[in-house]
Length: 225
Image (cartoon, rainbow, N blue to C red; front, side, top):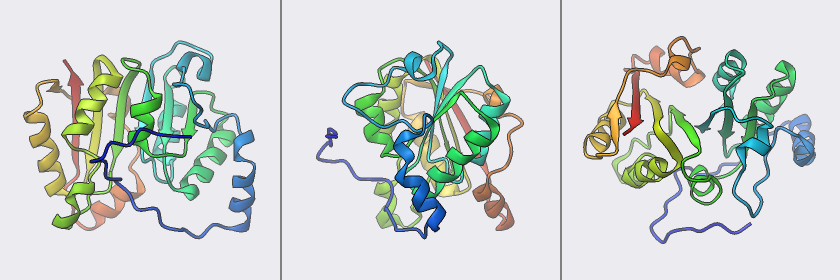
């Protein structure tokens, strides 16, 4: 599968070889036969065909262990969700949870979120995009790897519908300040209060870890004007 990669494109992650159990490895061998796993093809994704309905769709980028996304999808069966993650352990875990809870409104993609958004998501089709605790790349020399930058905001503005949203949560103050500055200098978005589905959400593993270290949790939500 060929993606269009801009010359200036820098991946926001470094793929490390995590330790997979024998069971996880076996699960991955048959992953393409899992109806909840969406394999990228040559065509843009048709949400109506993917979910067999016309419900609004939210894209979650970097869901980690997947438990927050599982819980939200379980609470809101009339909203469709697509989760994107690059790490196989998270992919296996969330697919097992989807089967456990018999969720029909959640699909999973194992790929680079930027490239999927750019090449395989139709314009003006997403209700919203969420990022919970994206990698802050705290060292200044690595800041260029942060997924949220002006190019990202402009890309999302093409993919979400009018009044669609971006939901971001981070425990890294420097990253939060940078994100707020980016939005303040982008005339496509308006800061709003939280989207209703996230108001009583569960805490993520990273969130609990950050709180234990006395990190400030910054919740941000912006609407496309």
